[in-house]
Amino acid sequence: MIKLKLAHLQEGESRLSRRVTPDEAGLADADEFGGAINLSFAMNKIGREIFIRASITTSLDLICDRCLEPFQIQISEKTDLVVTPDSSVDDEAVFPMNDEIDITGTVRDTLVLAIPLKKVCREDCRGLCPRCGANLNREECTCEDVPTDPRWEALKRFKENDNL
Image (tube, rainbow, N blue to C red; front, side, top):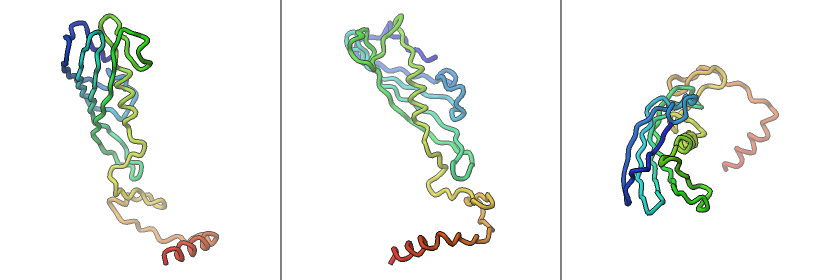
């Protein structure tokens, strides 16, 4: 769990940094998160409300969708929180319990949403040969051209005429 203690927070701006494990962030089952998660908080207390900007950085261990090779990327995300004892303020506000808040869910959700939908090791990844499975980034495919289904010939001619 990731908890922020707010009891002794002074009026005005303050900063806090923490390093947590994926388990502490509720990501024990997510294979993408293997390393430490760095958290940095910029907090601004005004009266009974606290405005928090959380910066979250970590690395992701991914498998390329094109070539199936493992690779790693760095991600850096930001999220904002408003902590207030007034429950009528906003649906997105966080309400403190015992002068501390649990932000595990916020950190977890922010990181899960940062996982790219298309995981590609690099933009020019050539992927795998659909016939022999060779990794085209490392070797040339030796497959012979497979004849095209004659039903596609009309579309092929259309495409050739379109390039004129």
